Image 1: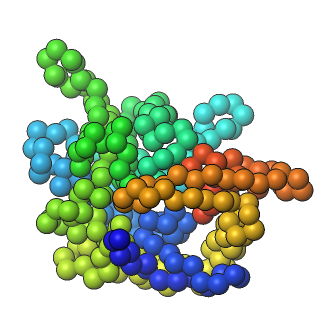
Image 2 (image 1 turned 180 degrees about the vertical axis):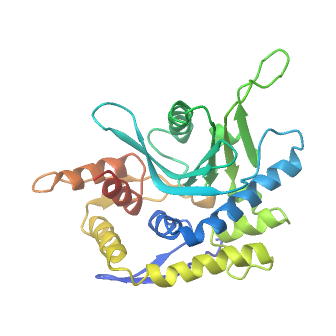
Image 3 (image 1 turned 135 degrees about the vertical axis):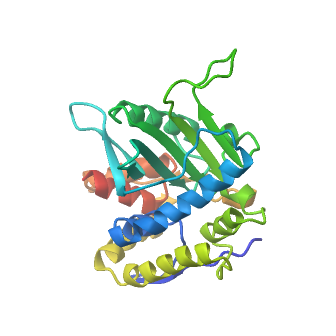
Length: 293
């Protein structure tokens, strides 16, 4: 079994809880702060640069110039203000480019990642006002249908006969952290860190990212709103709202089931249960409900 190193522990009402790098609440907490945006750029650029080195003719670009980063970006999809939330929207203000970034822990979701990615892609392109709007999905567990046994897959619109790329095309990139972590490279070291398998990075770039996460965690573990959110999520888990089962496939592929009674609970709790049934963890579900509310 692969050893995983948590960033640390947060003290909740019912005891200590491990917090790992790719915890949704923690990522949102860290990168909503402007002073951490450059580390987000560095993290994504390391992954993109690895792909560009392997595919020199790619249309994929690094993040350049002034940026604006938004966490839990809301796509409004109808007049009733129904939303879809994307983890991060990074606007390259000087380049007329947008990169939507999703950090995905689970391989099994409902709808599947392949469907969700297309859903977000269409929304992103449709609301980009002419800017190139790329999706980048960083996967902690391999999704076979989109990765097709590769470390990187970048889907773009091109002509089938000539292989020529559509003008100004946007794309969807999927990145396997598990496969990337086996490479002896800067991106491989970053993948190990993001997966929680490396506690002491050697490269200056990954050290910088790790230092930002460690510093953010010190504030995260003492934040009252964070503790409240994680306590509520744990309450659902421990009192029988959620009965999760981990399937024994390598690299943490998970399938879960949620059971609960709707009697006497508010709309937020019901919505949270629906999200858990569709594959979200309690922490992720709480974050989605909280953001939409």
